[in-house]
Each structure stands twice: as C-alpha cells, then as structure tokens.
Image (cartoon, rainbow, N blue to C red; front, side):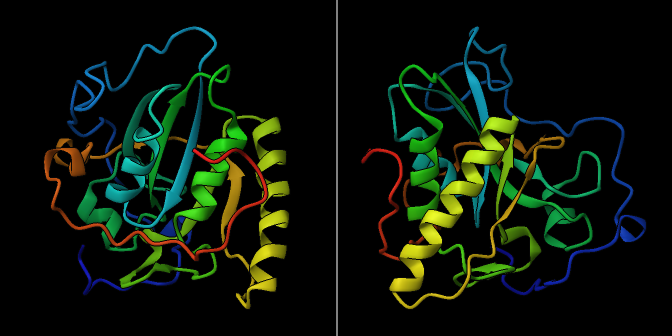
Amino acid sequence: MFFARKAVTLPRADEALPGRSQAIPTAATHWVFRRPLNGPNPEGFEEAVFGMGCFWGAERKFWQIGDGIWSTAAGYAGGFTPNPTYEETCSGRTGHTEVVRVVYDPSKVRFADLLRIFWENHDPTQGMRQGNDIGTQYRSAIFAASEAQLAEAKASREAYQARLKSAGYPDITTEIAPAGPFYFAEEYHQQYLAKNPNGYCGLGGTGVSCPIGLKT
C-alpha cells in the first residue's frame, strides 16, 4: 500500500496537516458481524486500539478471534490531524499510524489475549515500517483505554522483549501510550480482507511466542 511514500520521521504538532472538523464518511455496518460499526457497544464491553502495520491484515486477525469480539474497525490514531484521510495519513504529515479498534467482551476475551495476538502477528522491532511497508503510518503501537491496560501493555512488552532478545531480535520499538482520539478510516478499508479475500496483506510475525495470554 503506497510503497513510494516513505516518511520515517514524525511531524511536530505545528507541522501537521490541519485536517477537518467533520468525520470522513465510513461504513455504517461491520461487514463480518453485521453490527453497527460505531456502536453503541453493549454494557460492560471494552475497547482496545492496536497498530501493527497495514490495518487490513491486522483487523482480520482480531475479528477472526470470533466469540468475545463484538466489533473491529480500521482507523487512524496517535497523531495530530483531526479526521484525517488515508492519503493524508500516508503522507506522513498527520502523525497518525494505521490502527484497529477492537470492541470485546472481557468476560470471554482478556486484554492479555489481545496482546498476545498483537505481539505474535507482526514484528514490533522495525520502527517506522512493517516488512515492505515503510512509513510512520506503519509503526507498531498500543493505545491504552485505561491505566490498567497501559500497565498490562507495558508489562507484556517487557516479557516479550526477553523472548525476542533470546531469539536474536533487537529492542521493541512499539509505542505504548494512553489512547487519544480514534478516527475511522474510509468505508473501503473497513473489513477489507473480508470483502477482498485475495487482497494484499503484508502482516507477518517473528515466529517467537509471547508468554502472556492464551492460544487463540
């Protein structure tokens, strides 16, 4: 996806594109689950936001968990530009990375289980890229919805770093921070690989197992 655009340095807030005051159009309904894409969510359900490179493949990893996942959505987070478009995000001038928002039932799926999916299904040591996808929009990130998520994400990073180091990998570069605004991506990005089963997916893990969560 847009291989030629290779911004690898995040902009400052005063350098970021201005964006817009209104949300860009997106899908009303989740293509796989046939539920409203933007809620309302059932009482007691929680949200988590992950960046793993191209959001097409990352979103599929989470909806394929099945039971306990209420919804997933492709979007943009971690930057400055309000309501960015895909093209703006790919320019490297918004500060955002491609992310997936996961709405889940914590009585069936633990945050630790989502963290295991996250760590094992991409390479979190690559900085501003993921495989052949190069740019700030492909950086690895976890945006925590609560202090408990933030602490658990940081602890999981330390545990996985030890495993990766033993396997010869460099330090994890994953950004872990409190969640800011999540902006939905355009309709055609939502559940893209369900609509286009043979579509592009550059997602690939390290092959190193993560010592937290359950096998899913």
